[in-house]
Image (tube, rainbow, N blue to C red; front, top):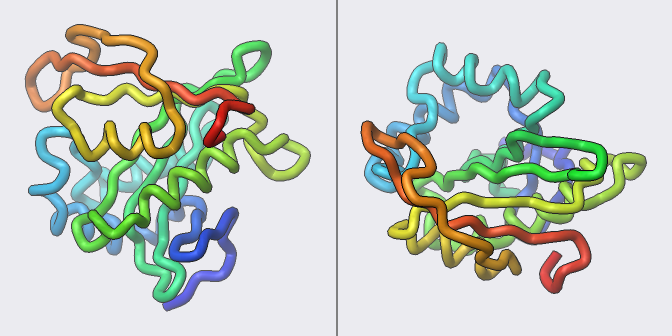
Length: 185
């Protein structure tokens, strides 16, 4: 099924908002992708978890979520969220994302992250978020995620020991950021 109301489109993927109706496809993709996500993230695996997860992304003022969809079929390839959005002088948000197994390793997320950066930095009067900065906190062992942000023009800004409690343990994170006007932004 093709979906034509994308917020941004690339050659292979389009970004669209989350919808509650996406729960069955999203959670099926999560189940197919457990081996890919562990131990880095734990996306919602039931319809109830999905609804609790998606509702703030749909309705919230301090976060926005994008489903990454394959343009040819409309299939959900993954998601990119901008969390902890702060406006004013800061105009910043923090990325969270995950590809689904059927889409991993195909370059779709490199394209999608570029679209998200463009949407985040576009002025609000043009339908964007009007941000000046995006951050990503990545566990040092997550080579695929580190390569993704490097390729999108993010720069490493620091290291945060024991930054987040993930999968029952405190995890170190590298802090990466991109600022509007930087090469790649």
